[in-house]
Length: 383
Image (tube, rainbow, N blue to C red; front, top):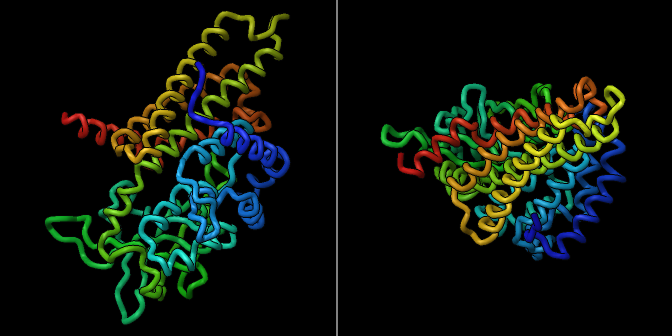
């Protein structure tokens, strides 16, 4: 099916990203997975390449591009080689929308140039040991003390948390009210070099092993008032504002990895022989690949429509929930079937399908579990 999402500029950008991945990422990726993250200097390479600044306005050192399509190209090209850019996605797709929407002019001038260069890497910390999808249960506190907030608490499952230079931390600046459990939350953009700020365990995951994930703790961390993002007490409102784009980003990566899995499986079955015949010649193989391609085509169509809606400012939270639910569930089906076609070699890490398999499992959990998304969709349906 002919795809109309991209133009010549996007395809030229794709060639640049593809060449960069082939030269600077793929040859080193196994080492990154063993270390649990890329070397810190890799983020400066991304800054030099210009990918951090695509959607940053020109006055802060970026390209001023508003379309999400360039981020889509990066996701597709990373999937093609079964690699990732470490904390890149959190830095750009999660943190940047908050900075562009809610930072004041002084903050943008202070933070965005080093954001673009990769000198300052950002992460976001919402989840706590006892609080996941229910953000209203956040227990981390930030008490006002003159021209500072005093931050105390802990966060977990923080992607990019090991190498981050600043973290958007969601904390309770005032108690919740009986009428509104979500009231009183604020976002502080905290310097990770602050006294009392501590990075705990680097969590060992079954997948996404080149992306550092950490526990964080805060003991009387003094955060300047000028590092409050937006207005005090409006944190929950801010968080929900970006959920649609975040969930579309996960749907996009899930679709792209499913598409890559089909290509890896096609290549393998055309080379592998069983009973003197290529595995690709068996009817079961053809049927399985046809099923997988059908899922990929459906996911691609849904993602493309959502990207166009996002660029037009029309993507709703329910739209994004539909996209994430379908694409992550399709990804699980497709990658599993494609691994099966590899036989025993699909379970060996030197084959990229094994990496796609372990990486895929979390997509139905983070950014809103499939169960939470079903609730959102049903509510939008008024049932």
